[in-house]
Amino acid sequence: MGKVFVHSLGCQMNEVDSGKIRAQLALDGWTATDDPEQADLVLVNTCSVREKAVDKMHSTLGEYRRMKRSRPGMRVGIVGCVAQERGAELIKKYRDVDLVFGPDGVPKVRELVRASEQQRVLDTEFLDLEAYPFVQENDPLPSGIGAFVTIQKGCDNKCTFCIVPSTRGAEASRPHAQIVDEVRAMVDAGAREITLIGQNVNSYGLKTPGEITFAELLYRVAAVPGVQRIRYTTSHPRDMGPDVLRAHAEIEALCPQLHLPVQSGSNAVLRRMKRYYTREHYLKVVDELRRARPDIVLTTDVIVGFPGETDEDFEHTMSLLDEVGFVGSFSFKYSPRPGTPALKLQERGEVAPEVASARLLRYQDRQRELSTEWHRSLEGTEVDVLVEGPSRHDEGVVCGRTPGFAMVNFPGDVSLVGSTVRVRVTRGFTHSCRAEPVA
Image (cartoon, rainbow, N blue to C red; front, side, top):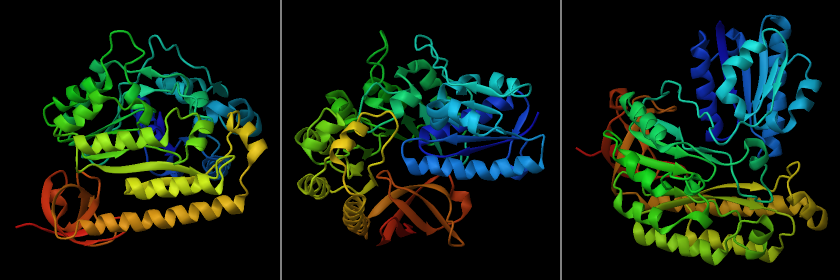
């Protein structure tokens, strides 16, 4: 059939979807390529969470459309969340785009690509949740070390700033037997670390009669022979139950690291965001996590400049940053998204762009200080590093992560990839550490 290139923008869910697209098209004879210049089919897998990602989609698409003009047989497609949100607009605007489909088009990508041979294709229909066809095919492991496994799709939360429920649809949990089988296949292919992913993993199984809970799933995955490390993302603080806390205390393979989005430290802002928890509840969850796993490392998501955010609200976010001591944050200025309830809030209480930018800069400066302090606190300690590959910057140096997700570089040969090496940290930086192997 030719060569296919899939350009992923956005989150890990998109990365996994892109891998499943490549794997399914391989069943029809398509060969994946890393070079769009060589591709007969280019698919841009898009993200709509922030306007910047949408702008990136338009600029990226421009490059591939220019390629197509010099190669008439080449096909170009727009897939993912922006395609779901603006499908009709995109196929009308870009007359040389051959196919447009949303995330629910991934399970039927083979028929959509075949149909695009004859005519332009637009598909933004959501699939039936009762028997949602979760894709079984996967890309070969890029590193042979870590693997992402999808456990659910969509989201039923109604956070006022978020467009995901309208682009990925309602929540559906994947049957646990499929998940465990996929984990087993990943381990057989060489994976040592499994990351379970979904929009809100803590709610896994709760809306499916007879399905196990997320905590039970963690125990099932941990029981697969060869699984050395388990992580999961993303969690909603409201749904972090005692059974998951118990799993953190009891499952050795469950890493002492968790991404727990808080979004704001202000109760007033959290109410407007419809997060359905308070600052106090969030701190209670953090305290319970640390009782269950004293060495747990926490990272988070934060939005500054949300409509109506006052100086006092922002100070609550800054104080939460210090109180929890997040090791890292994905932090952004509020980005208005089409069709979200926060647009009406913005009309009544927009934060001036220069104010939001100043707040973001201050937050990120303090976060860098905390990140540096944490990495430096590791100096002199011995840690286990699962080696992922060679360093991108230094000859004769390999890199990998600790159970707490610290990136560590140390002298070594690529033959160490896939093994766990005991090292002593010699220097901590803002984003990583240097170390020496322990004899």
